[in-house]
Image 1 (cartoon, rainbow, N blue to C red):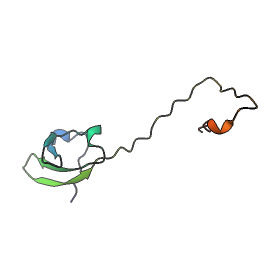
Image 2: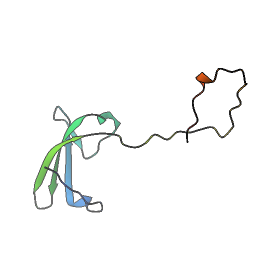
Image 3: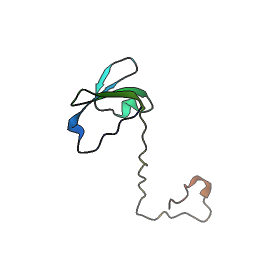
Image 4: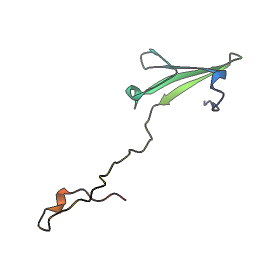
Length: 87
């Protein structure tokens, strides 16, 4: 069973998330819940509800910062210890 919440209409719904042991997490999750499966309940203004389980995942790509200064390597250096360039 799934629910679709349209952005801009969040004030029309009451969202409640509970942890594995039934602890009330409110309507926000964070890094502490990554990898966990939580129970949710969504109630609209008319009192209709839907519920289910949701697994919290982080799908955002990491940002890699590269130095703007060129890396100068001696011709006799062991380049196996140098990370390959990122494209």
